[in-house]
Amino acid sequence: MRHDPREGDSGAFASKSVARLGGGPGGVVLPTVALPGTRLRLLRPRVAFSRPVYGLAALTVLFAGCLAVVVFATAGPSVLVARSRFAFPGWMAGPLHGVLGHLIKDPNTLNYGLSIVLVAMTVAYGVALASVRLLSMRTIVIAVVALHAVLLLCPPLELTDLFNYLGYARLGALHHLNPYTHVMAVARRDPIYGLTSWHNLHSPYGQAFTLLTYPLALVPVPVAYWVVKVATVLASLGFIALVWRCARQLGRDPRFAVLFVAANPIFLIYALGGFHNDVFMLVPAMAAISLLLDRRDRSAGAVLMLAVAIKFTAVLLLPFLLLAARSTRRRVWLLVGMAVAAIPLAAASFAAFGLSTPNLSDQSSLLTMFSVPNIVGLLLGLGGATPTLLRVASVAVVVVVAVLLRRRVEWLTGAGWSTLALTCSLAWLVPWYIVWLLPLAALGTSIRLRRAALAFTVFLVLTFLPATTMTLTNLGIGLMTTPVDHASAMRQVRLEQQ
Image 1 (cartoon, rainbow, N blue to C red):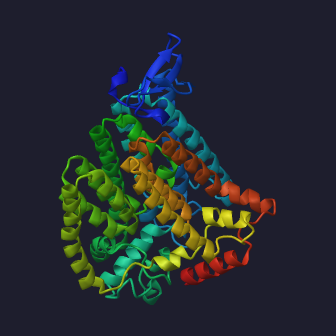
Image 2 (tube, rainbow, N blue to C red):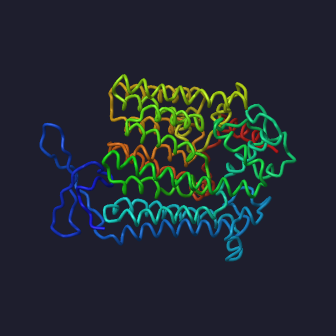
Image 3 (cartoon, helix red, strand yellow):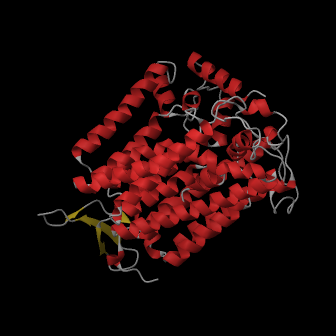
């Protein structure tokens, strides 16, 4: 597809005009910024990838990386699939199970192999973004669909969240116990129990999501398992389609926005490959943004309320949607839409669960080794993410939101920085949380936010590589050795205890 520079923005300099020097296809790209009342000002030059083959090669590497992970994960029980050493039936392994035999069984080799694949995919992600102007939308769509299709064939990678969703659904729908006041350990005889992990944790998931999973308890576990997988992949494609739509509404190049989100290696391997429920929150959240851009404010408020009921994180969008609405009338209609949607959602939640709410306190008291508060606490000599430091981090998030609103920054950019601040404040940081940030960074006007999202991606990839933990262990370096870390480890053992 022949590129028209008027078509929109791409890459790190989105929403900027572009001038090319040097005459040839390998010339230097000079992004420019048009400021009101000023002449165009040249920014730092950068060299663009000059041929479509670079972008095609990058997409090929991403697909090959995903395919390699799927093939090795489906081959047999391994460290790639949590609890597979206890049970790994054919319905869980998928249609590629045993196609190439058992392949590699050694956990160290698999962990190093996964680390190499993730690093290669991260490099390919950067190349794809740098050459996005030379890729057609059709090529990008084919790549995104192909990536989703191959990951659909994969069992959930590394974690058991998918089975936890089914465990809580069966606890409520089959055993008639409130998953917000009871734990899965009371239903040890349930066939899903051996595949779950949080046996002594009250459900941390939103009431709307839990209710949506209840019908899955009425079908056999293998059927429910594949329904969740297919639904997650379809929801992810719907989410990507909404990113595309929002980019078009904002006058941005949808190619960059789609690739920024859908080609991210963390999104692919951790979020989509783990079949996490974040995409079910992101679909109504992105729909709220799209509806607001269409000035359908009541509908925007209603679907935002649904996103909050699925995962409370979405509430962070509300102040920035109100900022975007601008007029008092539109803000009122947005709040009316939320109120109207809240009535049936609250009624359904009360009928099913009473006044109980998701258990976010237990999970938020746990630590991951490379969460930002834990690293900061160690650097400051505090012994990691202490309760006081976590409270300071929570206050800092509120301050960031307040400052951004007071300064009236561009609303998608403000929502993105607030989301990044929230993610950095979490003691229990897992890599796929970056998917909350990616669409906001892709659609906002801030170059710095996009760079921050890319830097955070690299940080998460490197710190959560299996090879990183193995290397630190071999060197005798431990980041989870303080009393705070030991207390978190003991709580996690208690919550997971059979």
